Length: 183
Ligand code: 5GP
View 1 (cartoon, rainbow, N blue to C red):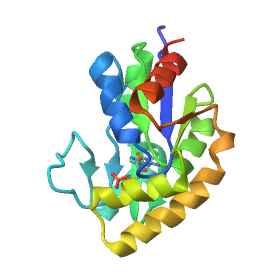
View 2 (view 1 turned 90 degrees about the vertical axis):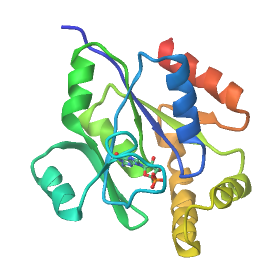
View 3 (view 1 turned 180 degrees about the horizontal axis):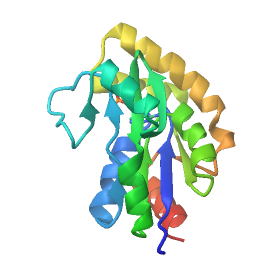
């Protein structure tokens, strides 16, 4: 049976994972991006089933109990997880599946999918990460402080991953990602 690849992109919030993923998908429409489940409220413009499956906490807990999540983690007061079924179906079809997830979940994937390629996206510096997060302006100051605290811890784990790529210049980072995924 054909067997595809699982690519996990991780790194701190604000590092540009989303931008890199959008650029990758635009260039390689055959890549399949997994849509996560979350208990966080939708931000303006976010679409149910496209950006996330927005779930009440009780429904998320049910997915955990029924082993329907490949990984999950708590992040800044909310829960996020990867629905298992669609990822496995795509892998079995021979497709390359992308996960864009935070660091704890990305670490957990090593147990559930030892063959996954786990890539850690680094900011050029912590100051630049903070600047990018503040520029996004979507969170309260308290939520921002939680994201920055978490980012500090997350950066310490970067060496545990298969590959690290610095997102300074978008084009350069994309080239490195393409090399990692397609070679
Ligand atoms: P945001 O609230 O900004 O959309 O996402 C917050 C963090 O959760 C980001 O670092 C994002 O990559 C991560 N995230 C999104 N989906 C998942 C998931 O399914 N599992 C895990 N572990 N993290 C996720």
